[in-house]
Image 1 (cartoon, rainbow, N blue to C red):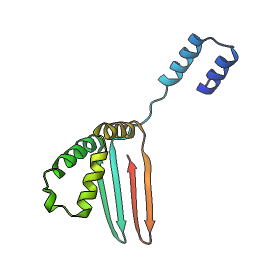
Image 2 (image 1 turned 45 degrees about the horizontal axis):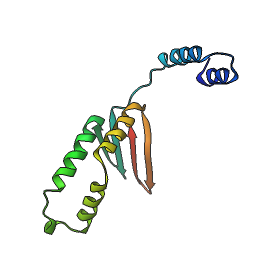
Image 3 (image 1 turned 90 degrees about the vertical axis):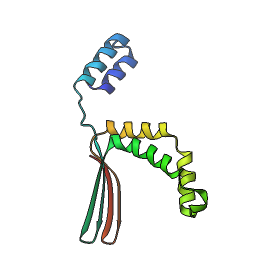
Length: 127
């Protein structure tokens, strides 16, 4: 019996809460999903291909490190684009990045982005 059927029976009063909980727990035990371990960026420009594979656990560290390093650049040395990056990074909370990376780690292999422009394409996925 799948989870929807269990919940429908509970709603109709055919089973009580304890029975429903036991059935839902039993259904959960049998499910073992593959977990994503890497963030993959694949850039193809004509005949050239640039695969970049980053372990998910490094994403949190890299974000924090990048946010810290960018603060060491003196304001008078920053151009408009770098100032915009600083403003964006200041608005992103490290805990949100941690939650995002944790969620990506719980999902199985999954394509996130696919962009094509002529003979150039970019694919971002979790593997």
